[in-house]
Image (cartoon, rainbow over all chains, first blue to last red; front, side):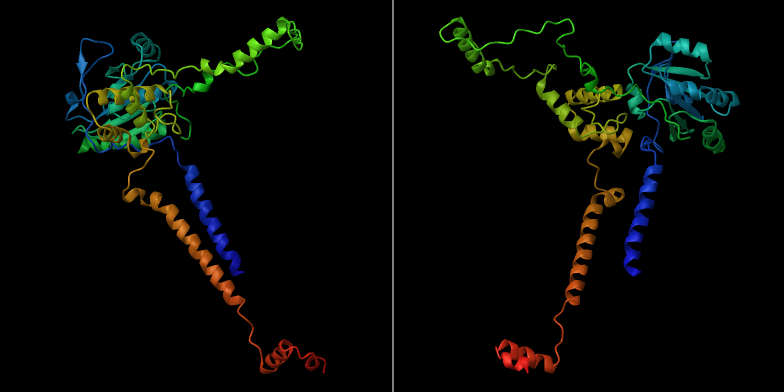
Length: 175
Length: 203
């Protein structure tokens, strides 16, 4: 009896280990930027290229930065969720238009609606690299001190907005 | 929740640039089968042709193409970029290195590496730059720190565990086959047998 116990135990341990491994999402790389100041930049705005935007302007406010592009299918999927977020008015939503064509981006916003206070143009993806972007869409919550507090890789779902982002913004707004 | 996110434009594999397989010419579909070559007659024109052919084949190796030149202006820099890029993981095509991947992000990151090297950054600086943004995940050679201790030492621990188990088993088996204890009578009988006194046995 005893001689079967040990292999069985080892087997069970292995099953647990592999089970945990299977349930992880290898696509989701934990961002080292959480808890760090949001990288600074100064980039032109999509609708008014002569005007620039920089994150420092929003010091003292909790805000959300959403990386999007007209070629990104999942951006369309999360679009209604972002519209909800913008409509709720809990935090200003800014877009980072990542490696997109100007006209395509404008047309996309016209077609689906523009939830952003402003979209910022990152035509060559350089700022995207600074923010560790590797899978559009990505969404960042940045606090009053300009520190990144949350990052979502991939589309924001209604559940994530309700359970993660909204409570976090509310909490950051209070502090 | 578990829905796959649409990431950057899909990874482009170099293989997909190759024409699809099976596209070769087939005889009989609009192509006449070429005449079967006959053995050249000695001394005739065919003989000269044969010699020519042999010479052509013999010196065919001279036609070896030269190594393709790198497209970059500075081959030494390009070599450094590629050497570093093979150490780094592409975030989009996660099982490819930055050097292998043709994902747009990989191209951008290679450009960043090149730019920074041109500006005088060392390999270490660039690795730090990328780790700051993408985490240790970009490194194919993970760093040695508390979180990665199990990763580095795990195989050694497993091997030592295996060796210990093996040693334990062998030691136990050895105990199990220890020479049996003989009684005085058996011992006397064995001694008699060994001394060749067959009579003692037959008794």
